[in-house]
Structures are given as structure tokens and as C-alpha cells.
Amino acid sequence: MAADIQRSYSRKKRAKRVRYKIRGTGKRPRLTVFRSNRNIFAQIVDDTKGTTLCQASTLDKEFSRKSGDPFNKDTAREVGMSLASRAKARNIDKVLFDRGSYLYHGKVKALADGAREGGLDF
Image (cartoon, rainbow, N blue to C red; front, side, top):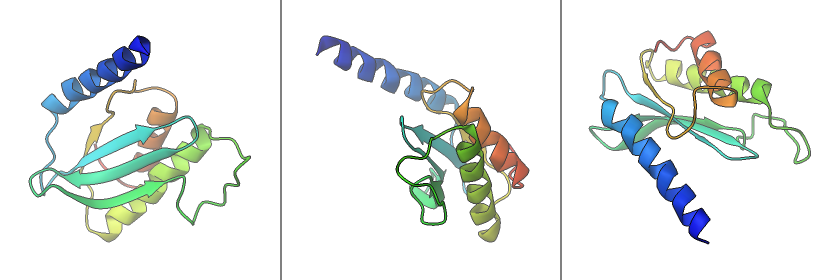
């Protein structure tokens, strides 16, 4: 139990350290990422208003993943491209990337690359 508490505390501490340096505004909102073992979630947030402008995840209906399909880098890239197209529809083209407590590697990097391919600038 103590290890779980320590892990949770360390994760929140890392995320806080990253977010201290990044602050999303109306002109340049923050693209934040949450990753679990089975899914990945990304949203674009305006911190001045405290609102989510758009979001995409592997749980969206447009993804044809079945429950047994693997969650890999290709899936993360598709989520990034989907988020970029939704952001473009709302006239958002510049964002700040908030990796949270995750390393910029693997699925998080694939999501960022997909968002860049979709037209987001960060």
C-alpha cells in the first residue's frame, strides 16, 4: 500500500513540475495527455477560462478498436491526428504540449507526432 501511495505522489509531483512551466492561454492553449495501459486521452485546454476546447481518445466512436485489439503507437498517432482535425475545426493551430508525468517517448511521442502531422504547431 505504501508503494502505491508513493507512486501516486511521485506521478503528481512530476506532472506539477511540468505544468509549472506551461500555462495555456486563449491564443495558445495546452494540449494535455493522459495514458493508461489500455487507452490514451488527449485534450486541448484553455487555462485562463478553465475549459476544455476539444478532446480525442481511443474510446471515441470513430475508432474501430475492439476490446481485444492492441493499444500501440499507431493507435496513439491516430488519436493525435483526430485531435488535430478537431482543433483545426475550432481554428486552433498553435498549442503547448503538456506531457504530464510521462516521458516524451513511445506512445506519448507518437500522439504528438500525429498531432503535428494533422497540422498543429508546437
